[in-house]
Structures are given as structure tokens and as C-alpha cells.
Length: 300
Image (cartoon, rainbow, N blue to C red; front, side, top):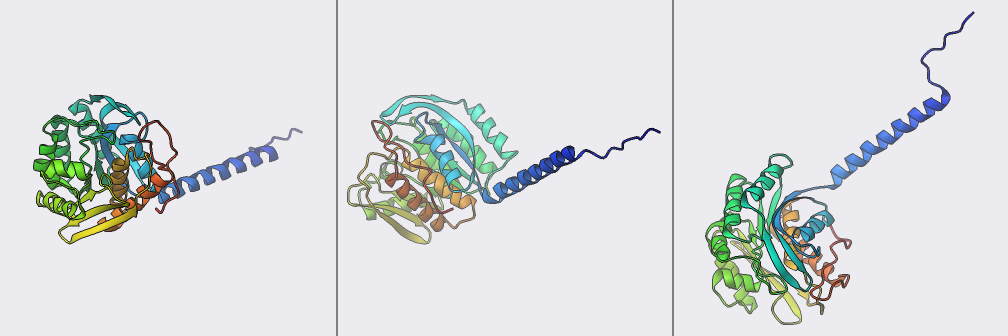
């Protein structure tokens, strides 16, 4: 008499299938946890820095460190390190536009951070995008000059920002030199920072954060100006040369906060504190203005 075995798996196979099932279950739990921990999609429109201290690279690190999701559209490939910028290779405007649309039509964004624009042609592309996605908060960091002092934008960009992009922005984040270039004012004191911020808001921006890191003194002050008035954020100055990419980092940190639903003042406060600690714990790399420590433990 022949005994026919059924499809019941062996004990070994049953154990294997159980392990596989548990592994898949754990994988789904990990994915769910990751989805819960990632909050805030930020589209970064900026230039690339191969040294990793500024530009797109610093932006991605910042957004990730603060618990957001970073997507990018690269406007230019720079050749730079901590000692300076030696070349800038712009990306074609139609390619920039295609990158932006690829992100926005699929993943989307809860905030847009704009860094290095480079030329007026690129600025026009960005203007079109901001008008199309007018409901998305915009942080515009008017990158005109690198920390090393090298120019990062061509003639006409500052004027285009004033005339076209400022009014489409939730907050502008110029340093004192950039604020002076945009307003024609001399910006060398707290009162002048506030006045410059008011002038930028008068251009149509909802707010302006004028950064005082380039001024002298034992305290670094940043002035946030909006229709509600002015607020000063203060921190002790750190004696260091590790300041490469501070502006990029701050703007991306603010954008992450806005993408996560924080009020502007709260987003700025967290961003200022994040950058201060990133400078304080900088690794000391490079022979010029070194990069920050974007991966320090921080409040999300």
C-alpha cells in the first residue's frame, strides 16, 4: 500500500517560512517607523559644493539631521573647497526646470529652499516655479558671495531677487553684506540690520532674517523682521574658522521647520541654535573656512 504525502511542509521548512514571515513583518515595522520619523519634504534648489561644506551637500545633511526629507534641483556645479571657489559651471535652465518638475510632480514639497541662483536665466525658471506652487513656503537665501569672498552670482541676480523673487518668498535670509547689496544700505549695526530687514519686507517678502555673523563683537545677532515687528536672536561668538556653509545650513534648517509645520519664529530659533552647535562641534577639516558638524545630536 502506497502512502501519498500531502503538501504539509517539513518542520525545517516550516521554521524557515516562520523566520521569513517574521523578517518581513519586522521590515514593514521598520518602514512604518521610518515614515513616522520623517516629517517635512524640502525641495532644495541650489548649487553643488564638492567639499561637502556648503550648497546642496550641506542642505541635505541639515534637512536629514532635523528629521525631514530632502529632494534637490542642482543649479550649478562649483569647483570649491574650504579655501575658495575656483570655477562655477551653471546647469542649463531647462534642466533645472526639469529637475524641479520631476520632484514636484511626484514626491512634492512642504517647503522650498533656494540657494545659489547664479544667473538671471536660472532666476526666471525659479520665478515660474514659485508662481506655479504658490502655496508652498519659500526660504530664499540670496547667495551672492561665498564665505571665502568669491562671487557666486552674475550681474542682474540681485536686482531680479529684489524685483521678482522677494515677493514670492516666505523669508529672505541675507547676511549683512547681501542685505546691503539688496537694499543699498550700510548694514553695520543691530539697528541697521532691522532697517534692512524692513526694506526687504517692503519689497514683498513676508519676513527677512538679516544675519549678523559678519559683524564684529563677542555676540552674534540675527534680526528677524516681519509685519509683526523685529526679534533678535543672540549667541556668543565662537572663535573659529569653521564657518563654511553657515548660510546654506541656516536656510535649510528654517525650511525644514516650516515644512514640519513650525511657526516662523520657532523654526528660526531652532535653526539658529542648530547652526550654533554645528559650529561649536565642527570637525576642523580643511585649510581654510572649514565645514560644520551637521550630524550633531539636535532637537527635531
